[in-house]
Image 1 (cartoon, rainbow, N blue to C red):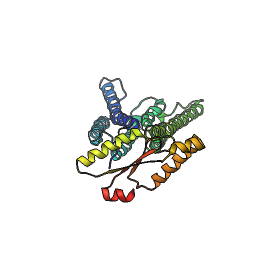
Image 2 (cartoon, rainbow, N blue to C red):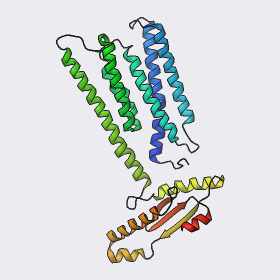
Image 3 (tube, helix red, strand yellow):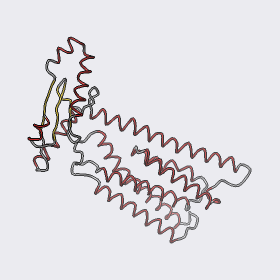
Amino acid sequence: MERQEMTALDAYINRVYKIIVLIIPIFCLCAAGSITLMQAHGWYPPIDPVLLMLFDVSTVAYLLMGIYFIRTGFGNDGIVIPRKLKAAKITMATIVVIQWNAISYLWPFTDFWAYLLLFTIVEGFFFDSRLVAWSSLAIVLSLIVSWVLGSDMLLPERNDLFMTNLTFRIIGLVLMLLSINIITYFGGKFLVEELEKYVNYDTLTHLLNRRSMDNYLQAAKRHAETGKATFCLMLMDIDDFKKVNDTYGHDCGDEVLKYVAGVVSTDVRKNDNVFRWGGEEILVLLNADEEKAIAAA
């Protein structure tokens, strides 16, 4: 079942998904259009017309892919479908690598390597370190191949400073790719994961918080009303909990709350949800009928 609650993380992913699956194809289209226009006005070195036509057609295909992902990527709840998000990531990363290679052989200047960062940084907004690592590695390997196949166009001039210039480029490439991969890793680790943690979970018990509870209950209600599923609620609290805090202190009371939360969490099924209602009160959303819910309780 797809997630139904709209968290801050969901809103972020929705926006990034919409932007990246369109902005990458649009950038590709602008690049192709610019080269084609300059070629038509004689401002660009001669290019094989068939090659240029294939380049232009491919960029239109990229835009159609982006539109397809926008039209099919969202569920009824307005949240990006996970499998569509994964497919869009892989598709956009592949487009970036293909576009890098295509422009590499159409670019008449020797400083195109410096644009590598622009071809990888946009993917960083997905905060998918594995995706960025693989795509940046593919770009570097293709760049090395292009240096071999098109050395007159992409490598520095062969003079006394050739090795110095080449070393500088290699160091620059390594530093750029290392930077974007580090940013992506820590962005995903500390921004996305921490954002989800603090948006959805109680910091003491690590149970889902009351804000999440409202979203889950609304989703369960919608499913029940449409006949897709049934649910039951179980509410419990710790008797005389105030006496525990008064007698042993709030630190001890916190440990009791964490212990009870752990017991409840481990004794329900994975598709059931446990929330901290407030104070010592815990609510369990059981995705089951009344008979099974009574047995669980």
